[in-house]
Length: 69
Image (cartoon, rainbow, N blue to C red; front, side):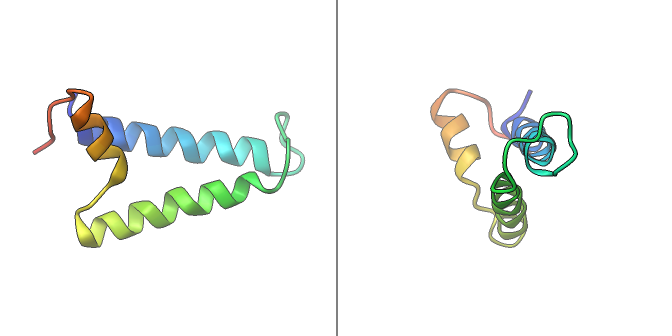
């Protein structure tokens, strides 16, 4: 699995989990503050599309994950 595949998998998981934790009426609702984390992940995805810079990819490369194409 390449670093970009892991980044996409992590981002999608973070968004879905934080929505479950932040939307009132959800079976796992904790606090609406989780929606701020959802917004942060979305904003990071947006900026990485324009700048081609992603903090998670840098961390994964340092952990030895092979870079994406």
